[in-house]
Structure formats: C-alpha cells, structure tokens
Length: 567
Image (tube, rainbow, N blue to C red; front, side, top):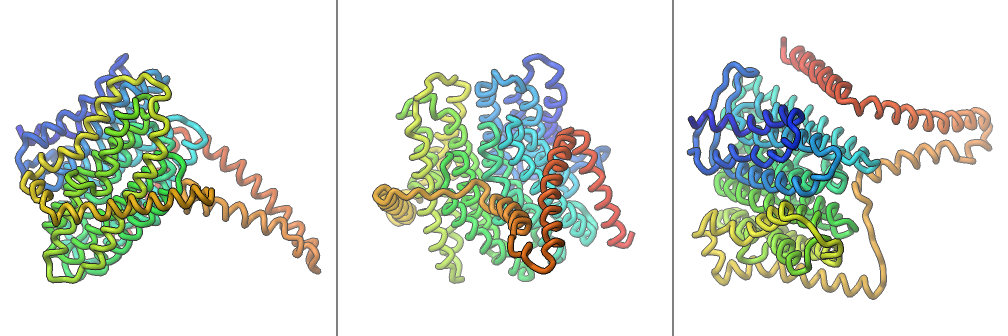
C-alpha cells in the first residue's frame, strides 16, 4: 500500500496534465494533484520504497527524512500556487495551457524528490526544467521570450552537465542507486564538477544564475512562486544525494562554500539596486540559496558535521520555500488588499528571511550555525559572514517592502482563492518552528539566542535607514539592469560589432578600402544574422522542433559517452 501511495506522488499530476485538455473546466482540479504528496509526507513511514521494474530501466522511488522535508515544502507550495492560479488566471484565454505545463512541472519536481536512482532523478529533473519553459513564456511578450531563451539555454546546459556526470558516476559504481552513488562513487573530479555545475545552474549559483532575474518577472505570479520556492531547491537536493563525502572532496566543499557566500552577498547587492519587486525577490533567492550552498559546502568539507548540517538544510528549504512563496503571491495581489493585511502577509515572511527572532528564519539560521559553533574547528569567519549576510537580507527585504507597500489597495477586489493561500503561507513563518521541533523553538527564547538572531536584523535596519537618508539627500538613483551579466554580454556583443564596423581610423590606413569593405560586410552580416536569428526563433517556438532537437542532442551525447567509456 505504501509503495502504491508513493508512486502516486508524481503520477497524479502527470495523469491530470494528460487529461486536462479533454475536459472543460478540468483545470480547476489542479490543486488536487498535490494530495498524494501531502498524504505521503503525513502518513508514510521512512524507508518506504516503490519499484516498477517494467518502466524505463526500472523505476525506484523512496521516502527518507531528507526527501520528506523537501516533499513537504514542494507539496505545500505547489498546492498554494495552484489555488492562487485558479483566481489569478481564471480569465486568461490560455488558462488550460498554463495548467498543463504547471502540472507537468509539478510532476517533475515531486518525482525527483522521491527518486531513488539516477535514471529516475534525471528524467524527472528534465521534465521539470523543460515544462517550466511553458510557464516562463506564458504571456508571450518580448520580455517573456527573452527570459525563456536564457532560461532554456541555462537549463539545457545544466541538464547536459548533470547527465554526463551521472553517466560517469553510474559507470564507476555499477549501480544507479542514489544511495550507493553518494557512498561509493570515487572522487572523480570531472564527474563531481559536472554535477556541481549542472545542479548549480538550477540552484542559482553565481555565475550560473543568469536566468533567475529574467524569468521571475516575466512569468505569471504562481509560476514565479514555485520557480523560486520549490524548483530551485532541486539543485540542493541533487548535491545532497550525489556528491560523495570524505577528505578527497574537501576541495569541492571549499568551492561550494566560497561560491555560496559569494552568491549570498551578490544577491543582496544586486537586489537592492532593482526597481521591480519580483526581480528583487529573484536576487533574494540567489542570496538565500547562496547560504544553503555554503552549508552544503561545509557538509562536504567536514563530513563529521554532515548529519547536523543536512538536517539544518532540510529545515532551511522548508522555511525558505514557504516564506518566498508568500512573498511572490503577496506581490501579485498587493494592489488588491489593504495596507494592514499587506503588512501582515508580506512583513512577517520578509523579516523571517532576515532571521527575525521567534520565526522560522531565526530557527533555520540557528540550526545552520549550531554545528559550526560546537565543533573544534575555527569557523568564526564563516559565522560572521553568515550573520552579516542576514543583515544584508534585512536591507533587501526593507527595500522590497518600500517598493510594494505604497501600492496597497489601489485596485481593490481580489478573490479569496488568491488571498487564502498567500496568508496561509505567510503564517508558516511564526508557526513552523513549533510544528517542526518544539524543543528547538523553546531554545530560541533564551537571551543568547534572541540576541544572536536580533543583532543582524537591527544592523540591517540601521544600514537601510542610513542609506535611505543619504540617497534622499543627494538624490542619486542607482539601478542595475535585470539579468546583470547577461545584459553585459548582450551590450558587449553589440558594442563590439559596431566598434569594429564604424572605426574611422581603419578607413584612413593604407588598406582602407579593404577595411571599409570588411566594415560594411560586418554591418550587413550583423543585420542578416539578426534576421536569421528571428526566423530561427519562430521555427524553434514549435514544440516538435524543440523536442526533436533536444532528443537528437541527447542521442549524440549517448553515442559519445558510449564510445568514450569503451563501448
């Protein structure tokens, strides 16, 4: 019975997606697709297994303490976003198409959480990534198409790296079981590096974060909520299951630690320079995932801390997923609710992300720091950087509230189908610690814990106030374009072609005629290339072309790997 229930976790949304176009109004049933996942979290014991030998190479699913936490966060957030979408998109002419992609992405996300072997994990990972394309591009605006191509490029790059790394690991171990891979896989630098990069693209690890600040503002609000709150965590889950432990992996742990702390700070600095709330929240996700990446690096670097840090990361995933989901859903409805409701529904999860005492954020940061404080190693610098990053998060969240609160209640209306899931997710911030571990929640009431949680928040408030007064006085407005590195690459490409084509010094040289012809050819070539790119994009928008190209590339990769591994 347990095996059947576990199989329904990814199967329910997948089957509903297949039958959705056939039934008029069947899209309203989308929230029901998460019920098997919630039932599995609440009713199934640890070590529940399911095996379907006749599907693919033999589908294996499992539920353990790590996957239970990830499944809880994903199921609650997907369910809340599905209810919200019923009210938000009820008048959308393409509502059925949205819900089909929504359910396919949900099936992929829930399926990879309970996957127990590499084949199943990768299959559901690819399903989630490719189905999310339909969510990002849903509005079909120029902004949405630009974000979609960047997202698709990063997704395919990540999947190819992950696929190659998995093939190398499975070949070395001789078994696709995730449990055996993490315990027995040799410290192959190439395989581990490919897995880190492949999953890092999904986790928003700097500099693989390019798609995040472009996709979130372009996608509908419920899609943004699950992209940032649930799907982005697939990278962290993959690292937990696929990166071997031991002294030989210390370099990988250091790499993850440095990249994570860099992402935590980059997300804050880039986020405060944004003008749109959803873009700011995207950079906030980069920052928060940076802290989780740093925690993963510490777990790899110091295996003796692994169990405690893994438990802390699982709680951090649940906390961040629910809080960030509340913020995205609240942003979508901000102009339809009054200021007091908005302060409650956005203020509490915002400050929880910064570590407000007695909230899930304070408990998540305490659980992450406690193993480092109890060990004999010197992690004082890491602890200080994490605390200062929390202060930066406070500045970022105050900036977010300053962008959203002035528009409170301007439009009026708003259905309870949109308000209820948003408020329930917002209430998770103060209630989650008591539901998760009451003893740990009581420990947060000690004066030492209260001060440890409070001083970064107070520092952040002070910095935000000083910054506000300074910029108000000098009237300087600083803005970082959305997409940061991608925007720079686009501008550099255009500027490079124009600079070569229009350089007058070249035309006065002895070979001026030749250079002039070359410049004219470059200008014409650049225009022709743009025209051809637009024409190719129109063809690539056909899903059969896109799917066929991806399938062909996978077959080529299979052949290369088969030849490289000795046939």
